[in-house]
Length: 192
Image (cartoon, rainbow, N blue to C red; front, side, top):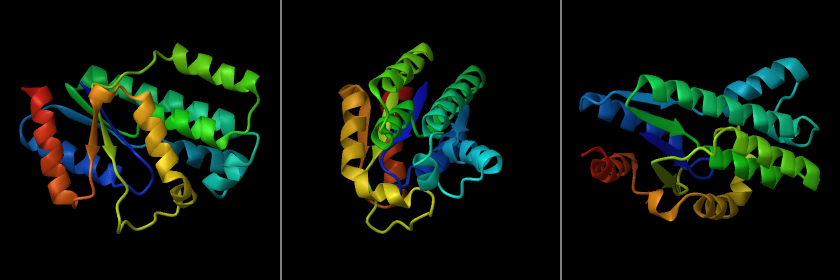
């Protein structure tokens, strides 16, 4: 079972995914957690090309390749985890990657078609369930995607349109402990 955590930056996806993974392990489930891969791919680009921020990279001619490298790494990590564990929680989804690729690239149609072709060639990843985390009112900025806070509503809308409606569970801003309880209750429908 593949479960994705999606939503705009600073919506608590990473924390929620980590805590849920621990809770599920404590309940006896075999759970793998795929951490958000964009930061490790960015670190490679920082070392190789000298980028100091994601915003700087987005303004460069390397952004398309960067997004594709993130997509490949995401799918590779999810595939490995799916082969090793019964439940995989993935911090971010391929839909998030698609959003960031299209939204932040002022590319021509040829390049966009190439990306879509590559996206499809990787298997049209489907998630059994996607937790769409709504933005948190009092979340500390992490300095990595703070600029993306300007497009929270657009990102949420695009993600909602990309994911099968029946597979989305909207996670409200109700505090971490209540979010965990809420998600565990939703997961019971899938795990029983």
